Length: 137
Length: 403
Ligand SMILES: Cc1ncc(COP(=O)(O)O)c(C=O)c1O
Ligand code: FES
Image (cartoon, rainbow over all chains, first blue to last red; front, side, top):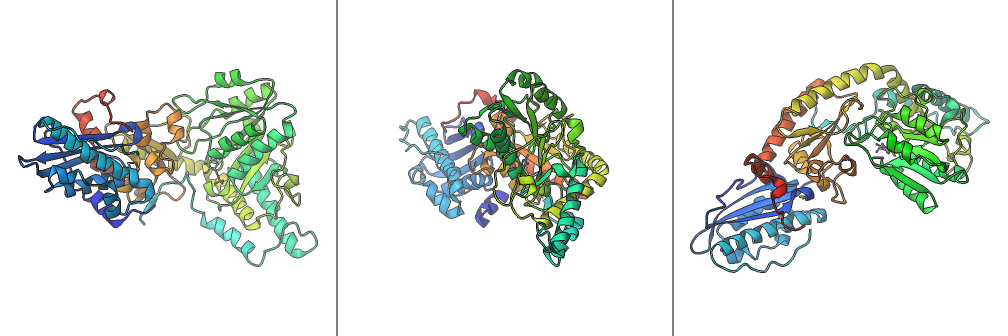
């Protein structure tokens, strides 16, 4: 199966690889997936006092599409409020990266990671965690 | 050096140009049907088939009457399993095979089960070999067939074929082996090894695709299989269908070249394979899969922990290799062969198979080493698991989110 140019671009030049201090109250961390499933994604956001995302970082263990999905997610997150970020849908990622059907779960993982990171931030800062629609992969 | 570099010779091999040359006339002027007994076109084809049958038989120490041409190892496996079951089912209905077999064997066994066979799927030890005591214990009076592969396609381990044959024979059962990965690569001798049926294929030994053979022993004992393809009674009634003359000529030539060049070639390849392995094992947390002593000369299967196989293959874009990772399979399940060695799922996901071949050069291996090292290091930079490992986090203690 050939990869789309956008997947290859994100894969070869991943944006925002790295680690934020997860003990910091302004950082939200989402760690999703499991090694046994062959995919683990860690996505982190840095949020300012207005609940705007000022920085985002990721590290991913997974296939090229999973790496590209998380790289793209970090680009999209920066500059969004946490409420706007909550609306990012995995199908947007699928469309942007032209992922084939067998790779949809890689984008689902990215959506899950975004939501987990936001909830981590919310709980740390006294906001209630938002209900996350159960996604399947 | 041309890129990408082909290091997937367990999936298929490129055809040797000498094989192609031998085949060409049989696509052209020598187009006859080997079964046409009354004219020169038929005679020319028949002569070529006879010659090829001898070349093939010689490679494995058989007599030419014992070679049944088929469309490949999948068909040979099916003919052996289903054909033996059908032929001998009054004698017994028990078949023994093992969990790391190719799907062609496993699924043919599943089919036989539907027709009333009882099949034992032996596990393998952590090194990929079957436990002879477990085989002995599994034998019953109703066992008619033991089918264990010669060399494994994913990890390259060589099963103790002679010992397995002896156990099967002691209990009055036949011994079949899928030798697709072994024939042409290492010495295989049906007499010395005690083989009653053996499947192999052209395209894994620098011959063409779509042609293979089943060895069926004719003496001590005389083995018979019920045909699975009915028709004109070709191949002593065991496999009907007009013979694929160009393919057969190609298989014959491929067999001859392997017989003459195997000794030297396997030494060259095992030296290159060792170089590849030793250079990659320098990486922290990299592991070889499968028995290291009993194995094919040209295969290396290595797990690079904390990176995922498909992602890794994408980074090694100039190398054509394969992986046991789930992400590469349609089913999203990691390799059942690696899992049956008891490998944890994450190591199975992290495995890469390098398959060297006749046309692999040292320059290519050096390039493969450099690109692999770079790729693993690049992906570990991206890997949250690698970071956690480096920080001393016990990954087994982490509570992973659902799935
Ligand atoms: C061990 C083994 N058996 C059978 C086969 C099937 O061979 P063929 O492609 O000739 O049907 C293969 C190759 O994929 C193999 O490696
Ligand atoms: S992470 Fe497995 S297919 Fe993408």
